[in-house]
Image (cartoon, rainbow, N blue to C red):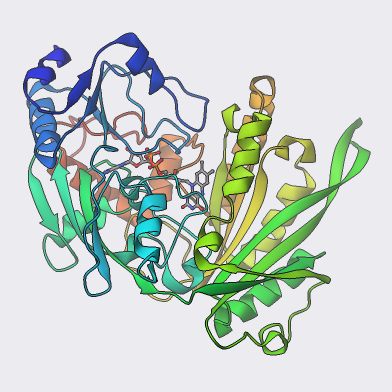
Length: 463
Ligand SMILES: Cc1cc2nc3c(=O)[nH]c(=O)nc-3n(C[C@H](O)[C@H](O)[C@H](O)COP(=O)(O)OP(=O)(O)OC[C@H]3O[C@@H](n4cnc5c(N)ncnc54)[C@H](O)[C@@H]3O)c2cc1C
């Protein structure tokens, strides 16, 4: 296999030197190291098509990389081609409430561009330094998802390159199967090169109410009410430990915490002031801590200072075996209560625990896996762990992950995933057979993003 040949086929840059390849050998997880044979920075969509066509003929593995903020090596390549989409970063002019962007665009840049025109994408992730292609391949969940679904739900049309190098335009109306398996498809069936996205006109300012709960049941009861009444544009909540010292468990003394639950509720406004009495009416919080106004753009960037602190403290460079799961609403209280009761709070230094309430009305994305039912609850334990504590963290988070699947939860696949082949099958459920069929059809040589999903041996699978 002579991957170097790719240099002569494309206009873009091909890096074969050890230093360039080492620079892209790990991701935000900082757990796995996988070094590609070649790092390819395409100069055009044509380059992407040429790379995939050649790779499919020659049997070269190709992994796609956005900003590499996933954590299980989804955007890494061992001994193959790593296709870095970041050079494809063009943004078109907004048109009829939509915008066409290339896949390597950072959400940060798109937000800067559209907010100047009073528009924003309806859903933004907490971290804006990730690419459009990277989040559309996962789903892209945000604090407005209870209203608008995921970022993948905002896509009207895609241009993709399939595993054999075919450039295809797809949408719910045209080549719809390819459209629906590409969104949340982890780069397994095609590379997204551009997307037409929905935009939303936003009010210039937001008001945020900082509420605190001392009881998960009370938090969830209020969230259920908020989801049904749609009073707020943005809902975000966390579990936050108040460390209580040590207690005896199974003969040893271990640290434990009492957990509190902050919830920030945010509403957009223009000339008319939001009416606090109406907005908070009927809620049973333990305390209201403060009320704060900011610009809508500042709100989109509200977590930048947190990430900056993680960088300054060294937490950003540690290992991140993040475990996010989407739970059936009714199972969530017992599951979360049990997991938090046994979670050593010191493992959360430089990280946090997210609680993300959501309501889904209608669902069109087969690969965005979530429990059935209108109301669901996302739960994520997102620690930064020094190397020596990684085995303990992995063991605790694997237990939490397995348990969430046993109560009907579905993992969000950007985090640290250690599934058995049976768990992969059960994660995709009734879509598993479709997924195998899409893989055979759109990536017949099996070259795209290998090493994450364990496909059955092709010689054993029937068509
Ligand atoms: C601090 C932090 C905060 C986060 N907050 C959120 C949040 O609020 N909501 C949320 O949903 N997620 C969140 N995430 C997770 C993050 O959004 C996902 O991991 C996302 O996939 C990262 O985008 P990326 O550009 O880094 O993609 P990468 O990690 O580079 O790639 C992710 C996957 O997409 C594939 N891929 C990348 N580009 C393409 C393409 N053009 N075509 C096809 N496949 C492609 C890759 O092969 C890989 O499988 C957060 C992560 C971090 C580190």
